[in-house]
Length: 216
Ligand code: AP5
Ligand code: MG
Image 1 (cartoon, rainbow, N blue to C red):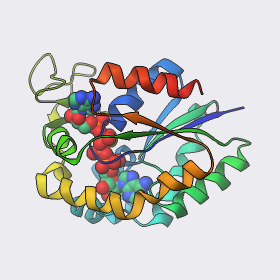
Image 2 (cartoon, helix red, strand yellow):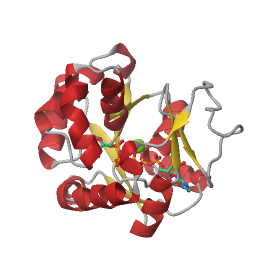
Image 3 (cartoon, rainbow, N blue to C red):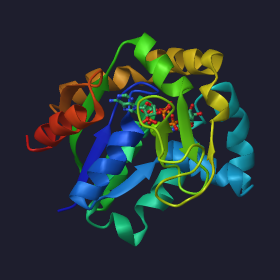
C-alpha cells in the first residue's frame, strides 16, 4: 500500500527543507504545492498566470485550482509508492479532496507531522531564505549557507529571494495560515494522524524527530 505523509506547519518552519531530506531517506516523491505553483509561474502556463497574484500577495490560491494541480501531480508514476506532501492540504476542503483522491489510489494519509515554531523564528527563517532557480533547493543566509554565495550546491543554478519572503508578506502568510490552515490541526488530530514536532531546533534534530514520528 502506498504511503502518504502530510507535513503541516506555518510558513518558514522548515517543511521544504525536511521534505527534501525525508524524500531522500524514504524514496517517496516530494510534492510541494508552492514549488509547483512557482514552476507554473516561471513557465508562464495558464495556471501560473492565474496563481501569480495570489502568491505575490501571500493569499491562498483557490481550492479548485490547487486540488486539480495536486491530482495531476499524484497521478505521475513517481508517486506510485506514495509521497511526502509539503504545503498541501491547506484548507479543510483540500483535506477532504485529498482523502477522496487517495481512496481512488487505494491509499490514505498515514501520518501528519505538525512542525511548530514561534512566529519570530518563522520571520527570520523566511526572510533569510535563498531558493534555487532550477529546482527550488533551499538555503539560508545564516543557517544553511551554500558553499559558494548565490550558487546552488546541488545543480549550480542561481539562488534568488522569493518575492513573498519580504517581511510584510511573510507576516501576511502567517496570518492566512492561522485563519485558513490551523483548522487542519484539529482535523488530523481527530483522525489520530497528528504528531507534533518541535521545529525550533537544528535541522538534524528536527529530521530525527520526524523519522521517529514516521515510525508510529
Ligand atoms: P509555499 O511555498 O508552500 O510556502 P509556505 O507554506 O508559506 O512555506 P515556506 O515554503 O515559506 O516554508 P517552509 O516551511 O517550506 O520552510 P523552508 O524549509 O523553506 O507556498 C507559497 C504560496 O503558494 C502560498 O502563499 C500560496 O499562495 C500558494 N500555495 C501553496 N500551497 C497552497 C495550497 N495548498 N493552497 C493554496 N495556495 C497554496 O525553510 C525556511 C528557511 O529556514 C530556509 O532558509 C531554510 O534554510 C531555513 N531552515 C529550515 N529549517 C531550519 C532549522 N531547523 N533551523 C534553521 N534554519 C532552518
Ligand atoms: Mg516550502
